[in-house]
Structure formats: structure tokens, C-alpha cells
Image (cartoon, rainbow, N blue to C red; front, side):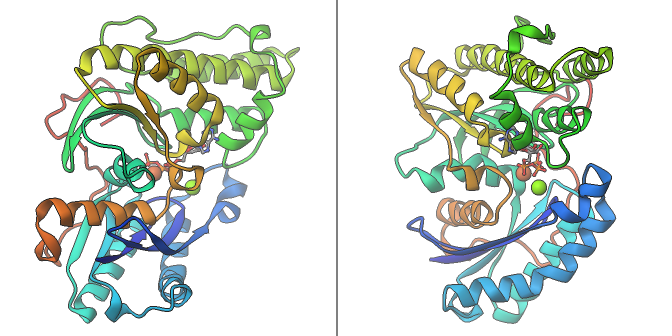
Amino acid sequence: MLVLGIESSCDETAAALVTADRTILAQRIASQDEAHRPYGGVVPEIAARAHAERIAPLIAATLADAGLALGDVDAIAATAGPGLIGGVMVGLVTAKALAMAGDKPLLAVNHLEGHALSPRLADPALEFPYLLLLASGGHCQLLLVEGVGRYRRLGTTIDDALGEAFDKTAKVLGLGYPGGPAVERLAATGDARKVPLPRPLLGTPEPHFSFAGLKSAVLRAREAGGHDPADIAAAFQQAAIDCVIDRTRLALALAGPVGALVVAGGVAANLAIRAALEALAAGHGLRFVAPPLALCTDNAAMIAWAGLERMAAEGGAGAGDPLDFAARPRWPLDPAAEPVRGAGV
Ligand code: ATP
Ligand code: MG
Ligand code: FE
């Protein structure tokens, strides 16, 4: 079974060819960092245009890399949401056209399900159920992953996502866009103890997150002057880690028996956060699983893999979505979860 995955929900245009035995035959990612850098963040209209210009040649090049043609592919999987709607539509419409032209099933994939299942692409031994921290540019959630399509949200952010807080911290410190990796690099050279910052929601009885207050405190520390930017970066990252560990520890207590603690999403690329979660898992006698760095940030291999997981769970290539499946700007993984004050779904 071979699936072509397509991703275009934010500012990466990506295509990948993945087999059911977890081999990534080829993958390409065209980042738009340069296009958005002057604005300090992703501009939706610029992103949508860039996706539209790049997607067809990118898919052709990915097929050529693997020495394959569209006819060799068993199904087409594309992100159908959540994300910037113009970009999502570009990828989804392209997938529909290819599915129609090649007479292949279309798999409309939830981008968050791509992140949530990505650790299983890299690690065949990772079985359900697991506790997942999904921390990315738009989300920060603790999910009990019980199976394909079975996600129970235990906690979420009531305001900003963790990746967003990293990006805003980078902006305040003049580190440019995208900010997460730059903050991590600078933090490694700083002393977190030199800048006191808050740990929002620490110790509260539900495993939710809040990063808006932390972000404002970073801004105030910067504006107050006198602090080394490296110390601010280190203090921010340490405060984020303390929140993440406290909230994840609580979620582990609420989740019931799980086989592993797992982290996914762009922020999972942060080695300091990974190390702290690994220590937490060890303290609970749990396996810790994190995808390789390249599978943490947006990519199409995780979208192809989510399509393969769905086909396996729903019964072969007969599974598929209708060609009129609509792109979704919002698409919670756990539709039963109560909305929590603020943004996070
Ligand atoms: P979502 O998946 O919620 O729709 P997204 O697709 O934009 O959002 P991802 O690509 O999954 O997000 O993750 C990007 C985010 O990850 C950015 O906010 C970026 O700053 C953050 N990030 C990437 N690398 C690191 C790192 N090393 N440390 C901290 N954050 C990081
Ligand atoms: Mg990006
Ligand atoms: Fe993402």
C-alpha cells in the first residue's frame, strides 16, 4: 500500500510518498519562511498564493525522486483542516484532482491527526493507548490517544499555543521568524534564574495551559531593560517547561493506564522540552516517544501516514472521503470536548 500525502495548512508546502510498512520513499518540503520573514509571521494570502504556485511541481518532483508515477499510488491523502483556509484548499483541491484523474481514493486528513499519529510512523512499537502532548504553532493539548480516530482531550490552552509563545518571544527578542529554534539556541547560552517569570495555571486541578501571561511577562522583562536576551530566552523556556511538566504530570494521573508518554507537533522539536518529558516518563516507568525532528514540524509524511492508518483501521483502499469534502478552518480532534474559555479547540 502506497499513499501520496499532501500538506499545505500553514507555510510549508509538502508532499511525501509513504508505504504501509513505514518507509518514506520520498518527501519534499518547500518552506515559505523567506516570504513571511519581513512580516514576522505567516500572512495567509501570501501563503495561499505560494502553495498554489508550488504544489503541482513539488508533487511531480516527489514522484520523480522515488522513480514512481501517479498510477503507482494507491490513495491520495491531503490535509483538509484545521489551518489557514486558503492554503488548505490548495492542497485539498489538488488531491481531489489527482484522485479523480487517477481514479484513486481521496483521504481528507485532519492535520492534528497527522501530528498525533506521527510518532507511530517513526516507532512501530508504539501502541495505543498513549498520552500525547500535542504542542505546535496553533495548538497545545494533552490527548489520550485510544486508537485511530479516537482522541480524548484532557487539557488545552485557554489562550495562546506554546509554539505561538515561542514565536512571540523570538519577536520580542529580535530573533526573527520562525522563532522556536532561535529561542532554543539562545536559551542554551542563558541563565534562567536571572529573570523571574510566571508559571500560569501551575497546580490547577485541570490540565489546561495558558501562555498569554508568560508572553506579556517576557515583553515587560525586555522593555524593562538590563536583561541579557539569552537570560530572557532561558527563563521563558524554563517557565514553559515547568508548565508543560506540571500539566502533563496531572494528565498522566487522569488518563488511566497508558503505554507511553508521547510528544508531537513543532514544539516537540525542542530538545530541552523533550529531555524534561523523557525524565517525567522515566519517573512514571513509562516509555517516552518523540518523532525525529523532521517529523515534528509540518510535513506530508505524517499526512500520508495518517491516511495509511485510517485505511488500515477502516478496511483497505475502499475507505475514502467524497470528492466534495469541504476544507475546514477549525476541526477539533475530540468533538466531544467542552470548549474552554479562550481560543484552543
Ligand atoms: P498547527 O499544527 O497547530 O496547525 P503549525 O502547523 O503552524 O500549527 P507546526 O509546524 O506543527 O505548527 O509547528 C510550528 C511551531 O513549532 C512554531 O510555532 C515554531 O516556533 C515551533 N517550533 C519549531 N521548532 C521549535 C523548537 N526547536 N523549539 C520550540 N518551538 C519550536
Ligand atoms: Mg512553518
Ligand atoms: Fe502543524
